[in-house]
Amino acid sequence: MNLAEINIARLRAPIDDPLVAPFMNALDKVNGIAERSEGFVWRLKDDSGNATELNYSDDPYIISNASVWRDLPSLQNFVFNTVHKQFMQRKSEWFEILETQHFVMWNVEEGHQPTLDEARIKIALFDQKGASADAFDWEWARLNL
Image 1 (cartoon, rainbow, N blue to C red):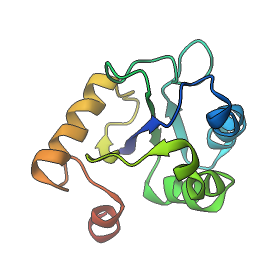
Image 2 (image 1 turned 90 degrees about the vertical axis):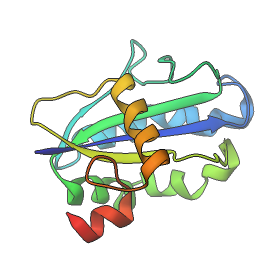
Image 3 (image 1 turned 120 degrees about the vertical axis):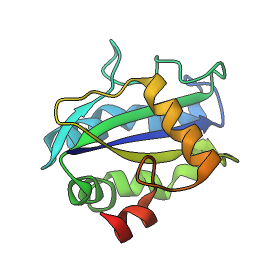
Image 4 (image 1 turned 30 degrees about the vertical axis):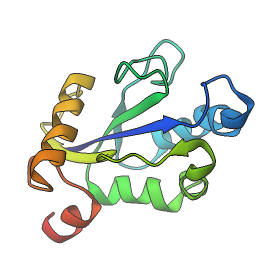
């Protein structure tokens, strides 16, 4: 089994606004690091090489990122031990706080590439029932995987 993840965020300004430019300008670099990271399997992307043009919802300020990793340690290493961590620490500069779950992981068969529809279902499942083997967060994963 591999580990899939979806991360959504609501921008504080339009995608081409100078307020979010530092984040937008770093996407290629951060995604490149992800793709070269040990344990990286796949990530959702559009023609731009990112997923920013793929509509997660009707809200044009919501952007998403979905990827698949070999296992939890591989994803953790990328998230917390690369330049990605610096951008996470600055997320309040570019993103609003969401009232619903914005990050969910789940296990997938090797070779499976999750769709946005699948990811929406996983986030909704987490929002409705909390963390479980079907849709979980970091805390649940650390205790159960």
